[in-house]
Length: 137
Ligand SMILES: [Zn+2]
Image 1 (cartoon, rainbow, N blue to C red):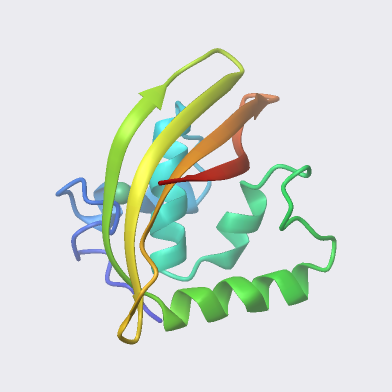
Image 2 (spheres, protein in one colour):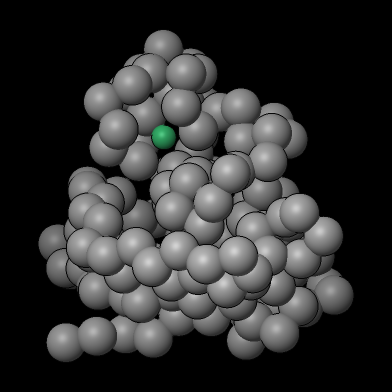
């Protein structure tokens, strides 16, 4: 899918994609875990599998060295999902470890696959990475 750089950013900031999450997808380092989390959500929406892979901690259960297979799985999720909304419920910042609790409203066809997740992030060598998530409620 080609996402217009002038469209509203999928993360819900109200800014244009090119003024919000696109710079991170192009290599700018998010200043904290919240910005990373939002840019990863946008990454799923715009089907930027490489960004998702690049920002996933090696200890994550989805992590695999088979990048081709992993990329395929991410793209399938991106293409099949109807990503309607991201809501940030809580952000607990830290120097090397941080948590973001969010609600993602996602549909697969008529199936409501929305969920609330508390995500854990680690900062390694100046880069925030998604470590793991716990589903709530
Ligand atoms: Zn954004």
